[in-house]
Amino acid sequence: MTTQQYYYGTGRRKTSIARIRVYNTPGGSTVNGKPIDEVFTVGAWLRQATSPLGATGLVDKVTVVAKTHGGGGSGQAGAFAHGLARALVNMDESLRKPLRDAGLMTRDPRMKESKKYGLKKARKAPQYTKR
Image 1 (tube, rainbow, N blue to C red):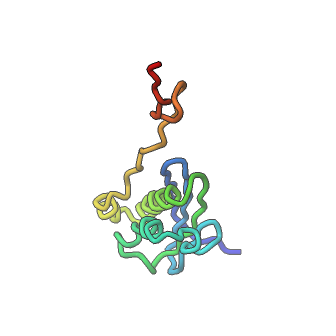
Image 2: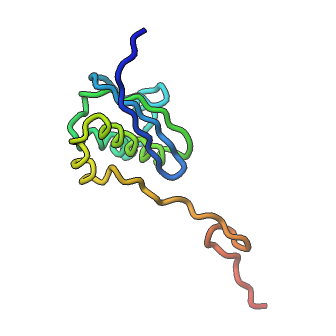
Image 3: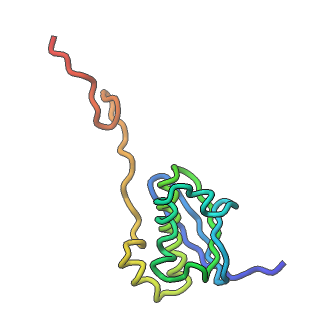
């Protein structure tokens, strides 16, 4: 068995984590052993996940193998895009500028706000009764 050279990147979004391997050979993208379009079934999720390839023009030039866990579809798509952008920069440092200009190198820090005691959710209070 021969081992191929790959470039690694970790992406995070909400509570999702994606570990990405990018191979320098032409091929498709797989997530958790499935084709990418089976995992990201919503069109917006698929566009977001593959946006780093579109921004750099490497759509059919690299093979992407990813493992994602945690969160839901939207978070995993964001984590996939973040990890893919980081892996592409590891592969070729000259791709940093177009990925940075597209806003794909920055981790999205928005998380779910934690619930507070005495409230029903993070900010929703029980109904006030005067009498």
